[in-house]
Length: 70
Image 1 (tube, helix red, strand yellow):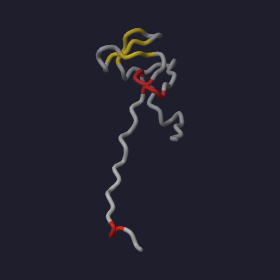
Image 2 (cartoon, helix red, strand yellow):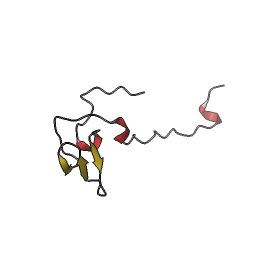
Image 3 (cartoon, one colour):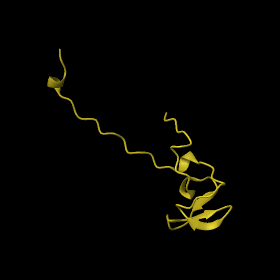
């Protein structure tokens, strides 16, 4: 499990608990500031980890018999 410090988190509305995405992913509806851009920042930021998209999995190369020492 990744351990995120407060310095690793980008504090924008796209990741905030107070904001909801509208039809356009660039526009958010904030409970505090109303309609804002998804990269808007304010002091009332509350991180919501479920709004982040995880990084794609790392592809592991295929092995054959010759890859192992027996």
